[in-house]
Amino acid sequence: MSTDMPDTPETTVDPSTLRRTFACFPTGVAAVCATTEIGTVGLLVSSFTSVSLDPPLASICIMKGSRRWSLLRDAERLGVSFLGDGQQHVCRQLSGSIEHGLDALVTSCTGEGAVMLHDATAWLDCSLHSEIDAGDHTIALLQIEGMDAHPDQTPLVFHNSQFHRLAAL
Image (cartoon, rainbow, N blue to C red; front, side, top):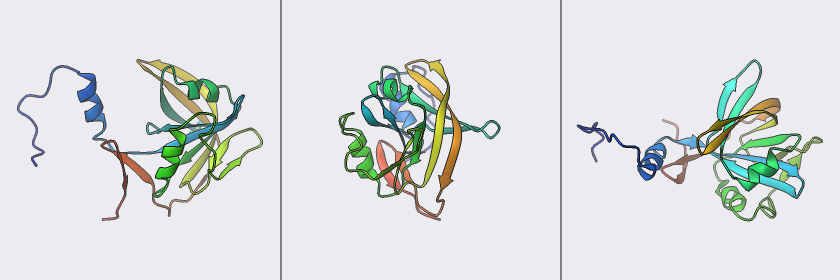
């Protein structure tokens, strides 16, 4: 398989080609969870980015019209759990119904309503700082209020529309 640069890159931006191109960039997987007006709700994101140390900010991108985000955005606090290797079942679970997305998952909840998933590699307790309109997505800036991390645990990685394990070189 050749990975040489093509003689002439595509000059049109076809959505399916763009999606396939974006899939070439591996990302971590995070679950954003909170207690909402209908109960505990979770949303998967693979577009988490650290933004600033001072103030402590991170960002996530959410498809406009997301019912899950419409519920989560009004929560006092949001729990962000970085998923670990072996937590693919969490992704399947959170892809199901909104009302039962966290059923059978082991969680902890802060007094402010941020929900954290057990066995994650790290957790952030966040409040919504602001939102930015960005095409067919919304960029949510999250103010980090607290955190915990277990860097010795292996993360879950998403690449080419599939989950993968990292291996040390």
